[in-house]
Length: 541
Image (cartoon, rainbow, N blue to C red; front, side, top):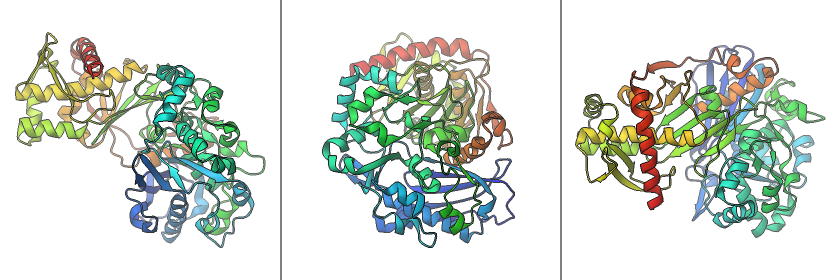
């Protein structure tokens, strides 16, 4: 376990954000100004070795699962650690959380009664929920064993684009609807014994609520089961997956919904936590969401913003008002505004590609790499590079492809041209696919950069020029759990205060760079050329 060593007196009220991620359960406490004052975590592999996971999961070929009871026991350990650190639970006004997207939990018939009425505060959750799940190993986001079910869904609904138009994404193997379909076909007895199916996020909320928590819109839109525009279950998708599925999934709610308004008898934290840890009886549970939507909240994106995480893989979050779902990328319901959307794009060739070109062209020196960016012209005199050393996710293609200003394929570039071609190509690809999903660069657009490469100002300058928007940076390693903590406060105040106003006192962004005056002129046409060349590469494969 890791924990903050700051033992100063905690202010009141406090807001607790939890993140049930792939490798750990993390807790973050923020004060009323949303300043982080405490954090702790339970690492599944290190702190719970009895479950035998590697990186928080079990892998068996294409099947990847995690022990459901591991998450239960991690909750016990986390709260025990907070108690040992003398956290005053009575000062926590509300709790929200996030969970790794696409994982699913299958509650056994009768488990609701145990959660609501039979938990003994003298015993751990782990001791009392041993027999509460019909499937002990939950499918998670890394599972890729449902290709048959994906094709079944796409065939039934009219093809990949039709599924994307309805649910926000084409059929993906890791998405929950396809996982449920597989269980329905291969383990019907277990399915029939299942009283409720939760996502990892709503599962975590259920533990604290003492009842089955509703799935929120944002995480629900990562299932291939929700009508992305109507914010309701898509009956034709449910029918394709399993019989009686709507009843097992329950209702959908906004991501900042206080669960108080959904249940007749309760909605505050379960009395189990009041008696065992000293939570105040009226501590409210706010709907939990997926880790990606929670990260959007933690990064505090606004309309027109795009967030670019520059890590081993690169990830792009985009705030959308009018989405255009495509067969690449994902459109989810926006977690902080019930009428808007967010897009998620993943690019496998991130820092690895940048480091590979640095090593081959600059003898491993970032200083030389940056000098190459400074010494070459914006637009690279029309030279364009596409660098997919590993099979790319967006688009599905592989290989290094270089083109001159005439669009003709060439074998190599000079070292400085290669460096700029890589960086410009990576960012033009991100812009192309964000625009494919409905993103439009406007006068108030901002780019928020995070991750390791966000410390490199020369790389950020190219990012700013390609998107023709100022770039800001934010140092945070806890965007999902912080976003959950922000949502905990927003859930209490959403009727009278926007999310933007709720987070106005949170840690400020740092301005990094602004686009050059000729950026729009250079990159609008060049990005169009990149789009045509990338499509040519992808179609050829």
